Amino acid sequence: MKYTPTIGIECHVQLCTKTKLFSEVDNDARGKEPNSCVSPVDYALPGMLPRLNGEAVRFCILAGRAMNCEINAFSRFDRKHYFYPDSPKGYQITQFYQPIIGAGYVELPSGTRVRINHAHLEGDAGKLTHFDSYSLVDLNRVDTPLIEIVSEPDIHSSKDAHDYCKELWRLMCHAGVTYGDLYNGNMRFDVNVSLAPEGSTNLGTRAEVKNLNSFRSVERAVEYEISRQSKILDKGGKIIQETLGWNDATGVTTGQRSKEEAKDYRYMPEPDLPPIHLSAEFIEAEAAKLPMMPKDYREKFGGIIKDDILEILLDYPTLMAKLNEISTGHITLISNLFASVLLAEEKSAEYLNDLPTAKQLSDLAEMNEKKELSSTATKEVFLKIFDPQMKGKDAKTIAKELGVVQENDLGALEAIVDTVLAKPETAKAQEDFKAGQEKVIGFLVGQVMKESHGKANPSAVQEILRKKLS
Image (cartoon, rainbow, N blue to C red; front, side, top):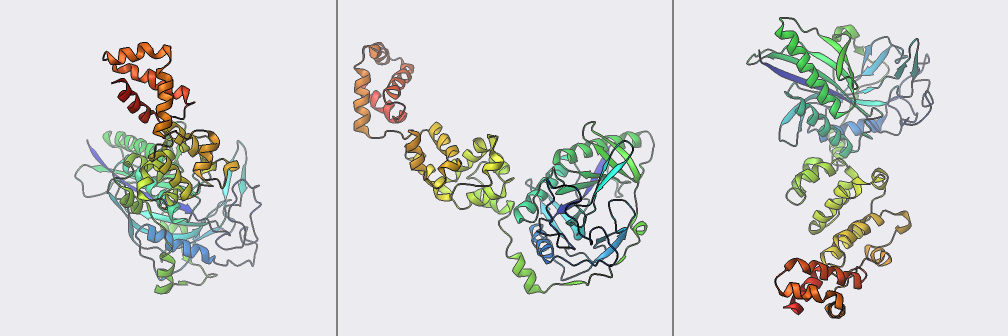
């Protein structure tokens, strides 16, 4: 029997606020010692009360608008009760009944729209590391501000699941609300997969795969679940509603626990935090700070930058913002240099933290257009611009220091060509060319380049040679 897969995705986005959601502790614990970024509020010392981080609320507005969502003027917090070592309070402070971000949608590069049901603000749990006979808990992550983005079940293929997660990641990174570091769990995806007979109006029983931290893992987990559930249904079995773990090494999901319902968490209003009231003026003022989004860049650069190159560059918000400063006439060359030269470098991540000025890049493009630099020399100067020792120098100065500026003076080039043609070792090539053997022109151009120490403009040289030999 054929089945229609239906996929809904919950995405947890860690917000890059300076401090945590309910305390004044450092929020960026990457690379820091376990349990070094904690406060009495985080480890639930009796009597310690939470204090809401206003920056997290502002980030929610930016994140919501990036997803074309309504921002709710009124929202409030609730307690979600569960007992686990990574949550010292015995509950999580979240927004179950009245979240801050309402309905919206994310548009994929293909044009497909995935509706957003809502997104709510909450504090993250800690991290458990399991060993053979014991587990260790790190509370650094406790109450890191999260927004949990809940999609509608609008996705029906593993590819669209992959593309949705990647586009969501791009939106959050371009909006500047998260570091977007997937390796360190800044964004994590819970994927719900269900199958129903083709043509059925009812959805099947769903299974949830938890804590996926890469787009490829999302795609593979969905593919595996579709295959696993299909085999069970083909044999007349029933799908169990459960929470699954994903093993990236084996490519297999394994059962962890039965799926909880809302009633299992005993939600109740959070008594220690007042509701959030936002004025329309405040919402609009904060939303106006949203920078250009991937869709804006696609509209601006479509047809100027090749689609495949643009999709690569969209993964780097700072790079796209830099391209936005450069005149349209130079964009094609500069975007190609970033995609094919810089991103191939081992230090590309380091280079992207300190990009050249728009003027440096524009000057480089102009030198290339005026044939003052060969394509090879253009790449060489481009990479040299990122050298800390070259900081502040313009492209022309760097090119001169490297000795790669091409000679374009026709009088000077003609003199070099005459010198080469006067040499006995080029006589046969000259005769062969006159006899119709076109390919020997390359040898003669090479001799001129050698004579000019690589500074002659090859195109101009070839034109002079052809005139003289004809």
